Length: 118
Image (cartoon, rainbow, N blue to C red):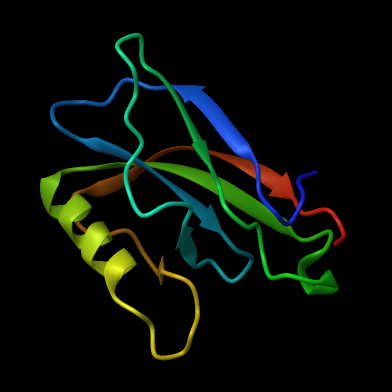
């Protein structure tokens, strides 16, 4: 169970070639929301840490709903796409998100989260 305000996520990863590690929060509809505007930079031993930002919408609507935290490895092209998408304001006011992973990006792991009330 996690609070709406988000959590600090830590892990250990070894990316392949020049791939970058990104974290996304997948909502029940399947959309992937950026947890940050940049990729995660693992230290020399592969350890990393990043805050998720908010988990779901403010208020009770998303309380007790299931979310997934998804780790994604992305090549240079996918990373460029992620950076562009994150920096482009959405007309609908929704947070930066994608429906599917682009070519050059693939999920390398995920974990389920349940949002606390409030």
